[in-house]
Length: 216
Image 1 (cartoon, rainbow, N blue to C red):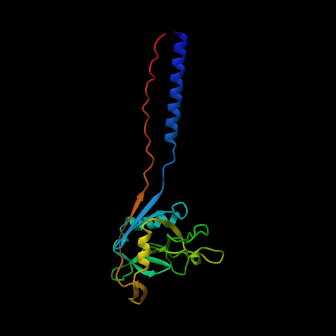
Image 2: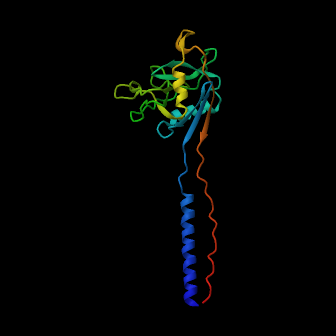
């Protein structure tokens, strides 16, 4: 009887120890903190992964504009094939929308303007970016940060719908409202929505009682 009870007790203690470790592991597991954005346009949707760890101020700025509904009804107003597509600042009547204060330039030489990345548009002043952004349709090394150039802040990449950006870059353009490279047929940004990857759910394990062993 005693050997059987000791064995049963040992198995039960081992099971409780395993269960405790499993609960501890699940509780401290790092959540998936990726942030995504979907740009819905009149030519299709483009899904982005945002680089919150590489350009936090820029991503926060973009999210604020997106979640306020700012981008709805704006257009891609500057489109250059084999270069980039730019939007997020003018409405359908080419009226420039009012913006918040500029965001600091977070251009990083280790986060280059490669094909499929999204970056902030700005004036010649490095810290002048507000709402406008562009998607690189080729590797634009001339836009990267160097020792002598401030560069353009890359804050995300296209994960779905790059074909839409390519199609936008190849539309017919002309001069409108004294602006060059404007699509002759307006390409509207219908919305920009933000999606946060779901965190890992912590489930309480069901602790099953060990089956009693048959008495010998």
